[in-house]
Length: 193
Image (cartoon, rainbow, N blue to C red; front, side):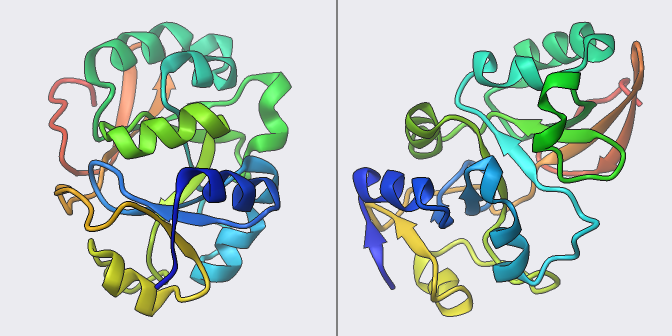
């Protein structure tokens, strides 16, 4: 298990490598958006499954949101973030190159985690996924994660604080005022779908 500090994490990310870090839900593997393919390769993830773009604050993510979804997005961001809600929204025209989905949507989230937010304030938004091999239940401890993903460095310090171990709730924007529930998770958002 290779534990690194924030400075080393920044160097790794800038060079195109992913790192593993703690969030409020499950540990994440993350990279800078231009290097997203590496997460698919390491996790053995289906290329049809999009990644989630995590930010540290709304100002880092708002430019990714298409104008048609901005009002709904901002209402929920103000209410649920930072926290365990992922919103899938249509991507603005000028950010379509960041998209990892075929339908030009992107999952956005701001985790309620000091470690994650501190890192992302330094790096800018990171494309992320849970820190596990696809299809295999992930672990929440750095020691277990390092057994599954031994080639990926882990942001310290360790031991990490407690995380929920439950995935984020995922909702997808349909049209103004209308969302679909994609995955039940930690956040309950009754009345939106």
